[in-house]
Length: 566
Ligand code: OOB
Image (cartoon, rainbow, N blue to C red; front, side, top):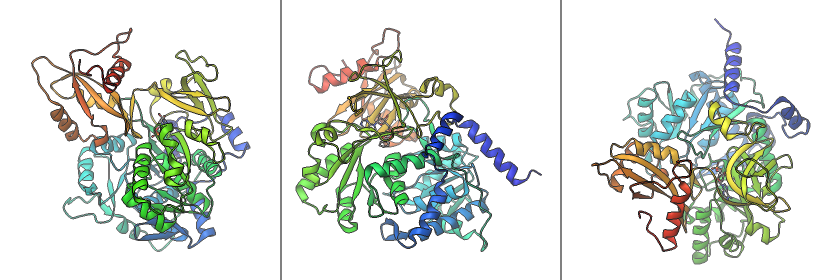
């Protein structure tokens, strides 16, 4: 029999082969410069628990968890997970809403070196089954019921689809109706641990800590491997830029598993600094405004459409937002017009954040002039971030010219998990990530996002990979061809329009196609807002569907000239 330690080393070796990493010389330089500290997230929490004890770490509904309590609960769950047979390098899909269990579970996984695979609360069967299958997850973590949705029913479908998935771990009640022995509540999981401390696996900060989902532009979503070292650096540097300290009270209004509220500087930055994280069950003014007043929230983050909703509501209701010092807005382009109104309507400073789960995050700085804060999406957080703005032939452009942003650095990945062929296209030979964003830079290095080269729709911060939805549409018997394009929208920035060519003699309506996508388990935000039936797609000169021409049709329609179906 192989010794467990060998199996563990073998599991890590395999995982690290699946996740491209930095070349040795660059890794050595990042370590030598003190960017990579060699600290895992498990060790970080243990240290903060020792340092801050009962100081409040997490507030969620009626629950207030101190640092020591958070560490202790995570430890119980970690011991339970080891008992279940979940251990180092194993993957666990975590789909948790903004509940305190998000943190106890994620820190439990960090403690044993298992990898959370972060799903979003809105994901449904199509996305979750894929994530479980592709990451070969041993377990799937869910809330019981949240915002009227029963995640246990979803999990039952996932179990049926993914035979390799062994455990569904439920925050709350497992519910009797599923009848599956795979379901276990977190409470029972914690109770599995014996009275003795288990032998904790040794953590290494150079290893992958978790897998984050890419916004993507391809048929199947890509997974982003982030190491403790690289992510911890991005969190620490974000704290410096955003002024996060022990006194900070950060409210996660967006789903906390997303990179922006998780780490820019987000919940993890706040825990790193010894501050308090307040979880909002929803980002609506009804939920968020009273919470800001009650908990004296100092900083929070929103996507642009929510910032618009907050400004409108604040103008009408005049809520007490006096504690709020900083509002971060990012995830999609925030119009200069709206950005210019933040201070007056919400009474706090604005920070624009342009980031990506793959790594690079740009911030406007707290002491920047309004001119910069309103009109740019910030500049890279680190002097170690390398930036190139290039034309279609990868030739570097002159300052001020618009081109695709390429980047590499101490917290930008060098490749996606198990995606060799895609990585060859998504990264340059010398390791720069092709962001797919069209940007220009000013003389100080501030970036303005000007458009997109990737085949994606940014629906108010929710990313939709056109090809993923097109593939689902092509599965419908009446659909001959499908092309998804962004249509401009005053509120969300963009919405998705599906152009459809039907097969001869076959019929389908928009509502039918919409129902079809829903039945396939696609999450709601990916279902096209509109269907436009047409006889042919405009083509590029190499014979591909011209998304640019489709977008222009939709633009022209908004400005009042041609109908998109013409
Ligand atoms: C954030 O991360 P993702 O991975 O959901 O999406 C990244 C993409 C970027 O490549 C860009 O296309 C778009 O979202 N984006 C923005 C933007 N912030 C992100 N486009 C225009 N203006 C902005 N301010 O969205 C994300 C990750 C960390 C922090 C903030 C956002």
